[in-house]
Length: 232
Image (cartoon, rainbow, N blue to C red):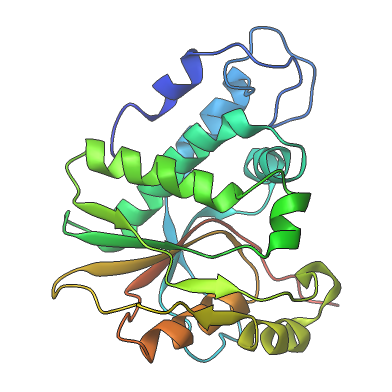
């Protein structure tokens, strides 16, 4: 662990509804009650992989399953404009990066880009905010970190409405490399960042785009992974 994570939750008193359990609580800090802080603090990054995994998907690490206080906190941040959660969530994402990479070494963080429509719907560039706080946490722990945005997002359907095949098809056509994008120095780990991995189609599509332009991702780091439910 990078240390000092939950001290971030003692600075500001925010709304009385806890982001993690949605209950009205008194004395919240950064919008999270002590019980939900304990649950989130007990999570440890782990390798995850969708089944089946799409071609080109790099090794993935997630803080936990998309459930409970982690799910609710992400929803509060992304869909309800609780921007104050960007700091602790970004710090949690830094924990995932550190666990995925191992001993500190130069890192380039590449956040998954939002379309303009998605950014408007989600109160701005939600992953960009997480990435800034993630980079700050890693730098404070002594990691050489840069943030790069080598790909841009083209308009695409909302993935919530798509099945696995639809997600893969939409993701394959969704990303374009930016002009002037070049390789990274030898020994640098390229880490894709996202908030949630479901089928892995988006991360795989970006990884394939980067691979042909000399920016092969080492790993993908996400906050949550959806757990596949098998029909009976």
